[in-house]
Amino acid sequence: QITLKESGPTLVKPTQTLTLTCSFSGFSLSTNGMGVGWIRQPPGKALEWLALIYWDDDKRYSPSLTSRLTITKDTSKNQVVLTMTNMDPVDTATYYCAHRAYGSGSYYDYWGRGTLVTVSS
Amino acid sequence: DIQMTQSPSTVSASVGDRVTITCRASQTINDWLAWYQLKPGNAPKLLIYKASNLGSGVPSRFSGSGSGTEFTLTIRSLQPDDFATYYCQQYNYYSQTFGQGTKVEIK
Image (cartoon, rainbow over all chains, first blue to last red; front, side, top):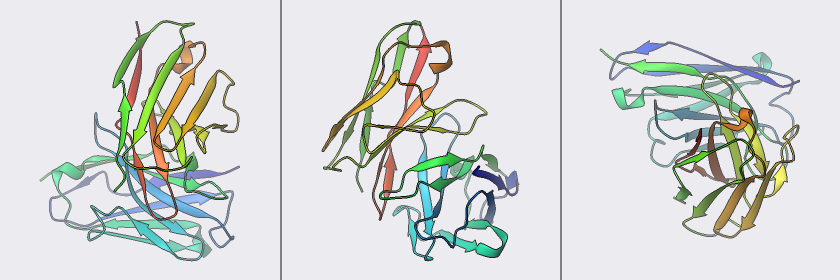
């Protein structure tokens, strides 16, 4: 059974760096084909894809946010970490991590419940 | 960037109704399209992948169709549990984009 859970600060100040951790079980990110992505949803707005890391350490980022994002994995801990620099109030959102479905294409078959991050001074 | 345009933004429907949601891509995405259901406080749920394939455990009243740039999600007979917001997602190895969402509300 695959599960994912997001953790990190609930409140960050403008200009600070956000660090979120996705802890997962039920699969290994060292297995061929695996991947974990990050998606966010500002209050009342649509989902926005942020980043994806593959089992082979290949990384993909949203073109509009690539300069601010870094995604890494710790296979031994079953964790994926997302950092976002220079946080702004518009980055207030629920942040989700999700398991990339095995096979071709990068859709997500298992999601965490999300963590709400508020950016405010 | 590939843009995804969903319509309508809101649909008011009753239990038992047939509901259709459309998603249009700004360029061809073949059949690299998924649909998700979101409810407040819950983890998003995969409904459809590769345009027309039903996700694991998803009721058969949900179906997806389309290819290229035009896609639809159909709920054959709306159930109380289906009142939620639905998103399409185009995906490939390099990037992905979500639509703006469609809220299915009680009429």
